[in-house]
Length: 142
Image (cartoon, rainbow, N blue to C red; front, side):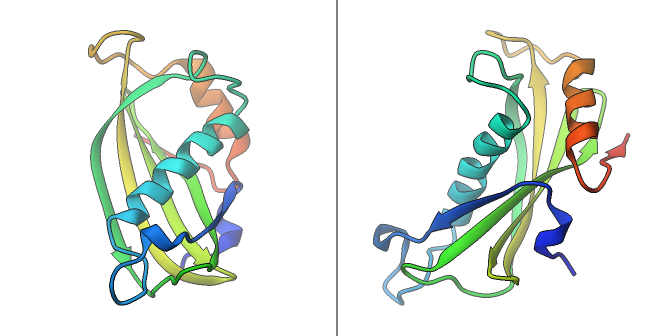
């Protein structure tokens, strides 16, 4: 089972009222927003000071599995880690926790593109090295 200890990076996030549905729970699509917020903070933690310095990616796939519900004003932790590093792509494992309780887990697949283009290219070696040094669980290499 996925735990907070699986992640070298966890971003704190408090549930806002506007993210809840009529039942008072976080509306499902907002978990992708939480992932997106945490991905940029993870990118900063990798040492990229600005968006212009960071590698550019396009999202190719997104999925999530719901294990429990988050509610208004819950304090959450969103974990992001590189799970697989391909030649031109990167899979990120994502998870949302309330304390140590897993509420949601997912996967984001990104395709690396050359800055300012939509043309794919191999992942830069320096980015791969950053990921390998940073992650608590070594990403698979495919």
